[in-house]
Image (cartoon, chains in turn red, blue):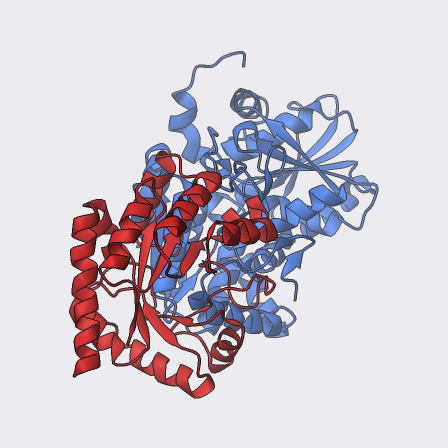
Length: 235
Length: 375
């Protein structure tokens, strides 16, 4: 079974959306706490963050939404955000409050593996990462390693990046942690192709767009990815 | 190699960029003490950029003081930014990069980058907020003339903050071929150190020059602070001179050091205009070059240690100083530098050195569009 990770931006209706995504087959939910200057994100997630901030989704409110999500779903919930949000709230304080609200782990997009090692989190690696960086990230990561498929920001792409295959094989050589690939995965064909290389996939921008159209559309989209991954398992 | 400045600095960037920062750090460590690199910079500075820049006594502007201006406005392209752009272009060439990206606020760093790219035959793309393109239109035309592509940034504040984010996004996507020529002493390590070292020539020259003309060190050194590159360049060689006061002047609506709090923006931890949740707030200044909610991490450390003081200056005060320097000395200062001039004249000390970081031709439309007020 390949793991399906779905990213949702924290909004008042995210608990309902998370439930729809899980019922449609999502195994892990990443919940984004918005930041005003998201330099690793493409236009879709940047705009979703702008809307979330305009809707008042500051850290305290995001933590409430996280707790409401936890009340509805039992899958792992990963808080994904930027360093500024942690730094302002207090690194240890946000970690403990988020865990109390139901977060199982963290992803800090602009925090490379050697900064703030005391925060146990899912590490990211990229096609540009050296073998030494892959080893460092794999040895400190929390449960699985996030493979950024492209040299670029988040957002849908036409094709799965050819850089994923060499990144996945280089990482397999240095570590046996599960590898989930994300950035640029937006269609069932991408999901299938990526899942032949790695243990799971992460879908962000396209999931955010589907979520904007409501739980039914999100469930339809997540279901199509689940179907693609499960067909692979049967084949 | 310095990656942190007390509790500030660091490398808060996506993993994708870490190998490029490591490569830059390694190359920089080799180059900074390399004689051939220094000789190349010196040759460019003296035969192309116009160094050393003079020191000018301004008796009519400041009749009650002995005030000297360090004339970075006379540097080629009209501001201190060229010191940094030339040095980083040489580094980029040694790294084998052929595509250069930059962010710009007032346009001075964009012009300096476009200039060195023309000189060295490098592709140049400059990100600039559309609001800044409006208020600094002559610099947009200059960049185009120099062969650079200016890409407007149409979201958020449409100023330097978003332009910097877009430049970093471009760098993330094109890091294999592209050198990010950052314009101030901000960003992830090693950039704050690289930029400081390339701008130190300002203070090194000014210190020698004032010793020569006055026979002693100044009581006070004043510079404007946006990201802080002219100020760190001016201050650095005076830090060991304990009796010399160092005063950084921030725009009152963009006082990252005066009213800011610790936070993380554009790859470094520093003092920022941010709210309790870490969301970055908008800065406001008549001067596009100071209109930035962050500042170089080394300034945050100098503030905390008390070695430098940082004071605010309003738009109106800067405009008044702008007009007065024009009328009394025949020098048109940049609006950014006008902030330093405004606080320098309040200073009670006798011997004052001010960094005139740039010339104000680019600001004429903005200044002439303002009511004259009390000036």
